[in-house]
Image 1 (spheres, rainbow, N blue to C red):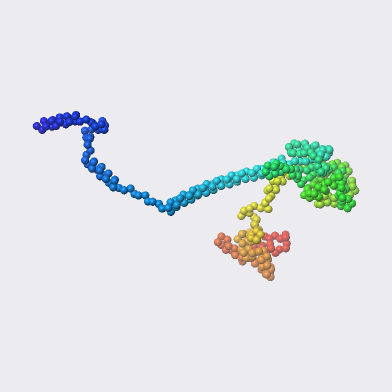
Image 2 (cartoon, rainbow, N blue to C red; image 1 turned 135 degrees about the horizontal axis):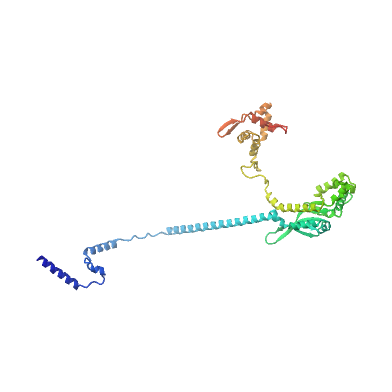
Length: 423
């Protein structure tokens, strides 16, 4: 009976499901699922309504309104931050520009230093040879040597005959090119006959019988009177053949001069001393033009080294090394540093430590104070032992100077014998 009732219920359920059209909004899976219903359970509807009512009752927090002072303060902070960034950016740009200028300055100094080196400076020198020298035999050796060395030289007429001078190309500031500056060195290449004329003119000047208007001496004296810094060297070339033939293979050019002029030794020496001391003119007797060429090359090399030497000798004492470890002590105009010099002077004695020297300088601040203290004592034994009791503090220990060092200091500052051995 119960089985028949269940069968009828299933038939009714099947007929009801076949008559209901499926909803368009449901997908295939939802229609196939027997648990899926088109109606929402009343519990879920109640939950949704409660949630909506609670969310509608929640009030969003109201934004607090800022005052004018706060707004102005924020603007000021923003402005300060911006200005700080601008300052940092400007500082970085300035530092970068300074580094660039420093690099350019160092590069320029390096280039200037490179130009002043002898191998580069000699390219700016020009050897000016007077045209009259080319008439002497052997002068072509000088020109060939200058050509071989690839040194600049010119052949031109000059105010003083038989002279060789030097000029240097010096760059001007800006883009104005270069100018030629004449060096203070001058070489006169004279034969023995020309030099005899010079000697006669000088002797007449010294004896107040003439004004030195010789063929060679007159323009030279005018040049020296205009420029006292000019350094002149007279090279007498053909002296060897003359004085060897007349002296029998022995002797000196002065002997040839005496035989030619009948002068005494004192007269020759008087002429040479006058030329050297009063006119800054040196006289050199050479054998041949090879020696003249060697002399000209030596002067040219010396002139090429001059700018670099002047640059390295600009400091007052270039041989003194700066630094605390250097041997010298600096003394200022106000006298500060003299105590250190006084202490270093005592340290020069053998086996006198810096601590011992400091003990002496603290007791006697100057050499005069030490000498005056010696003079107050009557006996020599007391003077020798005056410093023996001074306390020396070194590395936390105390000791005495001792009689030996005291006697050595006494002998150093009071002895009159320069050959005395202190130790």
